[in-house]
Length: 177
Image (cartoon, rainbow, N blue to C red; front, side, top):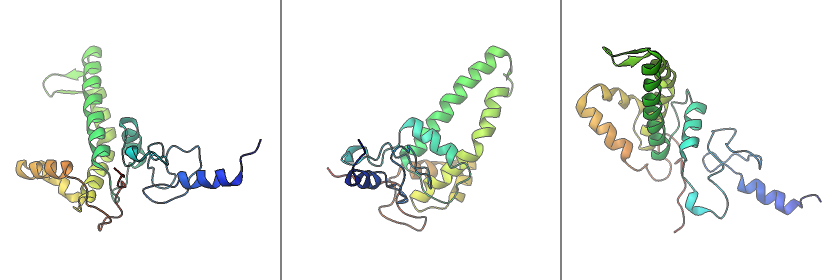
């Protein structure tokens, strides 16, 4: 039996991207325009709005490989950091097992190639995270110095600006309590 038109209209509204407003198909997991996960944004589930899961953060990191201009949530940033650290530890262990780990430098072939592969998306995500607190992505260069590194960590932990700032709309939406 075909689905009635009112149900189809409601579903189209349900699958509107909360980040950019694009209308997406019912079966889509991510917005085709900005890559935001649509699975976490379901009508009537206000407790999950604005949350990014670990797998979604990894997917978004790679989908926005060269996106240095929009904004990212704290969850998206810190899930990516956890992914990078866990993957580096695991791949370093693999390097040790296969004999490609250099104990003098503390680097391995496999983990080093992985590090190169996530360098650009990591920098892009860092820029987007700084944009969420209304800072330019160039502040990441401060990681080369100790004091600015502490400032960067504080900014990475800080909640994003409410509403729109000069880098665009907020990447999350307030939830009703």
